[in-house]
Image (cartoon, rainbow, N blue to C red; front, side, top):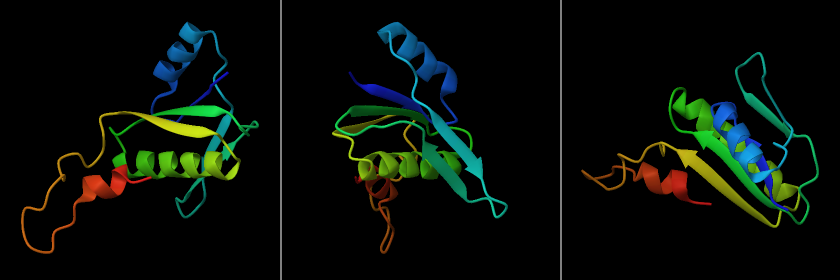
Amino acid sequence: MPKIFSGSSLQDLSQKIADHLGLELGKVVTKKFSNQETCVEIGESVRGEDVYIGQSGCGEINDNLVELLIMINACKIASASWVTAVILCFPYARQDKKDKSRAPISAKLVASP
């Protein structure tokens, strides 16, 4: 059975998806340290499971992106079989090609596993 988790920006939609599939939304604790670093803890075992993580690229884009990357890494370290990010409004999508010399392709950086 797959596990569904939600980042802080997509709680309502992730809950609706989990309800529709007859699954429980996975336990995640997200907090900020005093220096504004993001801390994410996955609250259940994902060993050998297919994991889906919902997060949006809207609003606080960089905070949401870092939270998502931390959640993906936490699931990988915890031996999830497969991790799929479900991202609404893909961040940095407008930066998908070089428009001048020495310019980064930021969308490629965000999309890389």
